[in-house]
Image (cartoon, rainbow, N blue to C red):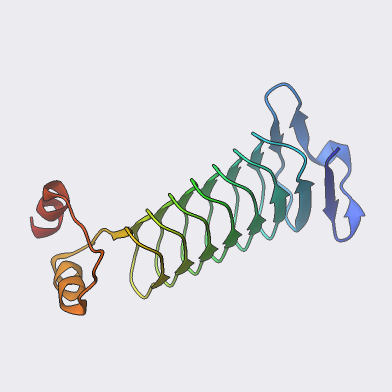
Length: 171
């Protein structure tokens, strides 16, 4: 059983669609608390200011200022100012001002002012003013020639870049 509340009260079923067969929840409502912790493989399409508690293999397409507490293998497409606490093997495509605490094997594509605390084997493509605390074998793809030069100057031990990445930056 799942629960969806808004302002501390159960959300009326006429304000959302739950496709049981495909496990897709769709709503344009904001300020929701969604507890799907007993479900895996759910796709969420919601408004902003939502809090999610879910199982594995979920996909999120949300507005801004959402908070996620999930397990592994999730995909997030969000706007800005979101907070994520996840397991590993997740993919993030977000706006700015986001905070991430994840397991390993995650891929991040974000805007600026993001903070990352991750496990190993993560890939980052970000805007400016981002803070990273990672384990081994993490990659930050430079966005510009200056980013590439600054990364080299900083002495990042685990900075890796492919020939194609270099061509994208230097051209």
